[in-house]
Image (cartoon, rainbow, N blue to C red; front, side):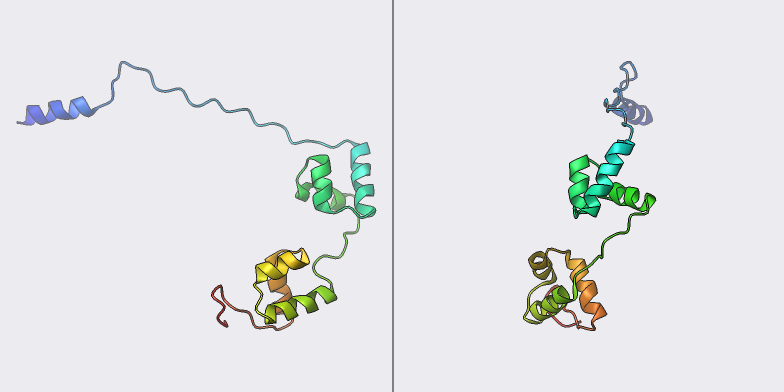
Length: 134
């Protein structure tokens, strides 16, 4: 009985005469794209003339965080972040009318988390995802 059990187990083992599967071929990691001095100057000028970090990232085919890093490295003053006081007032009004944070954010062109932060800073009570007061 033990011999039969052992033979059954041996049959379940993988075949040792075949070679193991080769790992999938993956492309080698590429080096991060580097901007030369002229392109950096162009990026800085673009930002100073009003282009957004997102627009510059798309234009130079780099991450938006890289744009910010380059601007900080060259001591370029960053524009004011977040919604303007008028936008906050509009956000409060729309939210109190029952609009969701996402809908208010889309209307104002900012992230819903930005709206949430602005509401909290102004002491506006927020709702949960089901519309109930927190």
